[in-house]
Length: 359
Image (cartoon, rainbow, N blue to C red):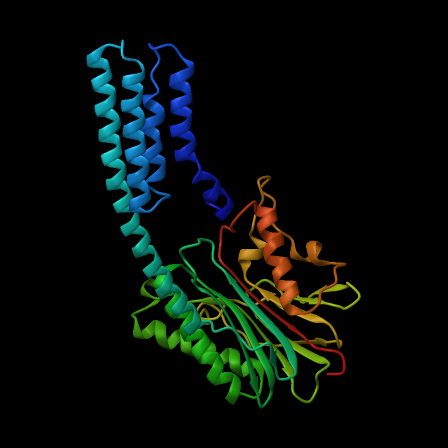
């Protein structure tokens, strides 16, 4: 429920009690307002505090008793039954409120742990790294699941600024753990290896090593689609991209032009060299000053609307102008939400870097 809807719903218990009184006054005595008074504490239970729910429950019971007095000629047994019904419902509402409160506390604790895990595995990068403007976002498919198998990292190294965006097979804690392994291996390899191909090789070996340690892929999320990118420290106008089975990045020019950086040759995801293997090869392209590089996971391209149409980032972003990587990612997140009519069906990891003018 959205904050606005929740605020609107908080008025319902009062509306029901007032509506019950008005209904009782405006109708003949054979009609009863007890459904109004019974519903009020039940509506209040998940929305109000215990004290406020108790106040609504008391008001409902008082309203029902007033109704009995107001229609003094009503059948005594029927009036007593209605009053007892409202009283029982009021007591049940207090119990529901306590149960909802405990569940909310547990959920808040889970969210705190999830946020801590996200900060540890996917720390927010600095706004500027190696002379490039940087922004990153992680959008969970569920509000109570802040992190999954999608990953990103950006690092300034002796060889230039290196980036990775990836998506680990599977969900849950095992996917999170696998993402942490990939990011850890990337940060080490990005500093030490002289080429993106060598970095990809290190990631491949790290996943294979972890898979053997856990007795195979059945117990370990064993492969990861990923895009590795590099802006060399001595050639800022050059962009190298190595794609291992991942949605291709987009290069957005300052004039609104857009280029999809599809790989020159398809490749399997990381961790699948035992199925088939061939030498990695990074593709090189021109990285103009002022342009933006956008990397994302398949939560973007697989987002569907009510007509079952997939979101097309190339079509939606072509011709637009952005005030930097953060502006690009903010617009993309909102546009995907509009396309799907709410939260995406899958997690999204987004990373954007911009080569500023004069860099």
